[in-house]
Length: 361
Ligand SMILES: [Ca+2]
Image (cartoon, rainbow, N blue to C red):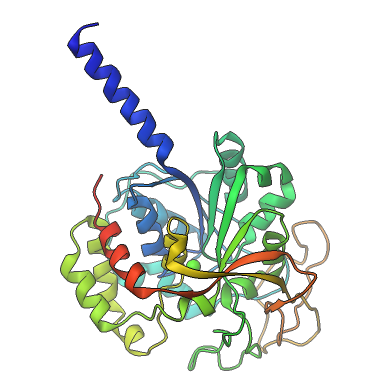
């Protein structure tokens, strides 16, 4: 064997082993502000291989802008080319949706420009992309859920065999002892629910399917993210160190949302969860038996319900949820045992976020 052939053989072997060492991940996202750095984190991470991104159309962003923005974000990172699809625009049941002004902000990237990719989202839906990606995976996949779990709930109902391909689900959702985050002054004062967290409340049926799927679940609820408040100092540090196109894009988003940071209501929710999928040591974990309240009533939050179809995914009539408690996660002896991030460590996570978003492969 010539030296040149040996060199090529060795470099091929090294490439194969580095690809094997990477953790395969699928990201399910609702393309809100916190999802963008969460995606950038994993798309840059040297130990992660993002196989697909499934956008939900029932979360903060609408499908058309949300899924195209996901493609655009992917293509400014070292993981360019990762497939993206969008899912149904209605949750599995009920009539809950995010406030319109939040959806507008998610749809427009807060006005921050980003180079438009010449790729587009796939023509298939997110549940289908999830099923095909998992079925063809050659090793167990970590599934990250950063919004309402509608795509995952539908995929598990349609193709239960995919559960055996998932190593673990990391789900940003719920609140255990922390008061929920539904009531935001000036936006959702009329909501009746004072105990839930958005991702679980928007589609509690899907959240329940995920928790009860039998797949190991790490839940990152508000209890685990409340240590990760975003501060002006974080923005300054982040902006100073931003070098990659991804980090520079998010530094520009930070510029636009100083009001949000100053409100004291902005935390690293989804991006912490993305980091925990690679670094579980960023959290203090506790095993808890959990369930989700799914209750029905004729009461509403007032106003007219969104124009969702009257039939659910399974052909049964869509029903109205009880607006007070539906979506609340609660401790239940009958509930599945879940690994819960009950506290997280900013001194570990925040420097790692900056380091990872500036990593170039
Ligand atoms: Ca999200």
